[in-house]
Length: 444
Image (cartoon, rainbow, N blue to C red; front, top):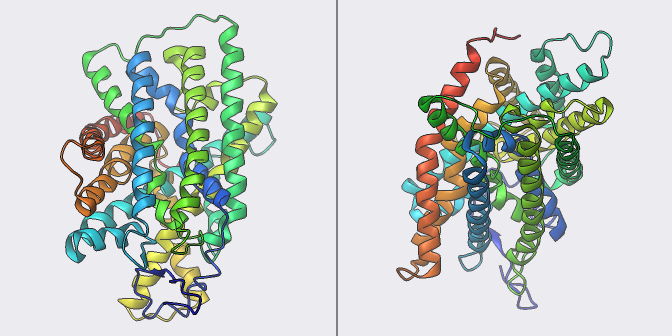
């Protein structure tokens, strides 16, 4: 739409048919500042995954572990730039959802069925892992403080508490209304990362004996552990599936497209990401060696009050992260119910559909609460596609860069790395879950 002043208004690529009266006003929801994108990206990225990085190094070894983390950071930093560039790649259009972009670049059939399942899988997988993380961290908080009547409660009930809280928060209308929750979550993630880093350094300086060999002693064990570690690291770079939704909250004009504030926010966010990841991963493995747990905060014990607070910070963070990853799923579910099943948009539809989704992922989390295995399995199965592969496929198809140019080489490198992780990591994740399940009682 062209205004009297000559500016061209960007319009969403999604079809507003039947949903325009329910969804918040487009202009009202695009008033976010660039630092909001920093908060959202930190919340989406620095989460449960950072706590598993020392364990990943213990499975891979010092040099392969650190190299894998650095290479993953560089490649996903690049692919996030690609997504920011492609958000408004067509004149007068913007792509507020991953699969909208996929449909535009690859065509309706291939784009929808290639991109949409991957994005939704990532977001649902994140919700499951955050249910487990939230329940596990809240239980650890009460255990450390030895609160009477709370420390002996099963982890299942703590996950249930987390689910009830998410049912209430899930009634938030849209992404833009999450800025306060996301900001709190981002601050919490940085805080507990620093607690893990500082306390690991203090523990390491005590000079306790530790081994830096890989965890497993058999060839099969080392192989499967390495596969799982690749998925754990991939899970740590999971924010791409909501990148376009985050960018959709930023104002955009022809003169100043949203990619400018988005990239500014991404640079800040990714600087925080590598600082948190490097400090926690290296200090955690250095302090405890291959005895480190799949959640480094579980390994730390003293001072008990600070570790308790750090675990509560994790709980608060995943409360916000769950919403950041689930909001696009809510939108997809409600749009499908209205456009395909002719349901009426209403507060009741929102309440029922979102409650069912939250209860479903919570139930799955109660059944398989294996943090380390879930990171490896979902990291390889889903997150590599949205963080490593699909952005590059879309970029190559849309821009057709010259063969052996910088973008051609880096894009194909990211695709190859992503495919390797996608093939190997789920195998290691499943094996870790199976080993953990041998000593697990359902709903314990």
